[in-house]
Image 1 (spheres, rainbow, N blue to C red):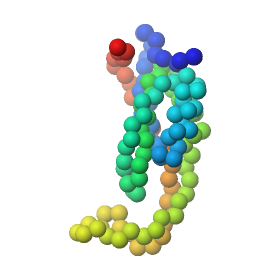
Image 2: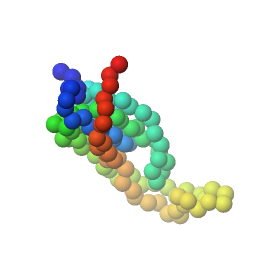
Image 3: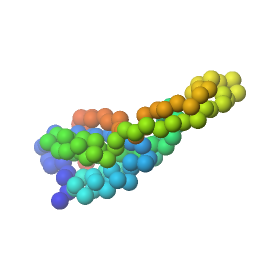
Length: 119
């Protein structure tokens, strides 16, 4: 059963930025649970690695369920990265020794939707 916003209900847009490694499992879990999601490739963060951004429209009452699905599929994990050499005239992102960093997880924004039109 699809979990779509009904007329007259408060609609939220859940925007979740996740690690590419977690994207396929997250999309599968969302669709299996009846949610529709728009998936977009994105880049950013400390390592400039690929991310995937999901836009998920939901009634207010289903937002916590969406967040639970994201939590279940997007766990943080540690990764050791090798030193990077500085780029010409830029020390941004430069480090000289192997570092253990946290990757994965999700950054989530929940936005009020003023108007929702399905054409």
